[in-house]
Length: 207
Image (cartoon, rainbow, N blue to C red; front, side, top):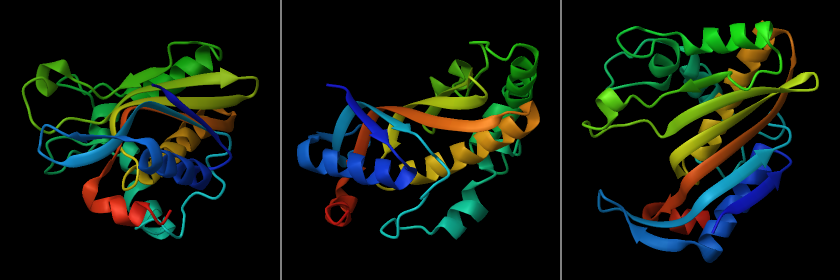
């Protein structure tokens, strides 16, 4: 059963989805043997992704998210990891396609395009390796004079990772808007499997 949350801010969205999962989520042991409580197809629409960005109850501070996550989606360097989101978005595949530059150029050329899309999934690799991206599909769309960002996430740790994801997505949206010359709009995430791991259940109950 899909879940929809219209949130005023990232903190509002985080608190509400964590409570929903803990109150009514199903339980499942995933393919790696981890116990989770989860909801399917959780859509969270954040009206202002730049207001009230990190809760005091979240395990990481805004300073940590700013210094560690803020630019990760824009850095094409894979470093020593199997993949990074920055690599997949800015230097995808053997062709090293810069999808963010494409998005910016597309929105400049045709402001109301429905094709300002970037993806991280690479079926040539991700069907045969163990570590695969969770954030898969990014769509930027102009609404009046602002640009909104919608992201499909196949698997999402809503207690531990969602706030960091949204923080980084906000910085990505800012980058695109700065280069296109439009105002920042909303961020919407659609988490196909929105879960909380058992080792976080006790802390999540305090949210």
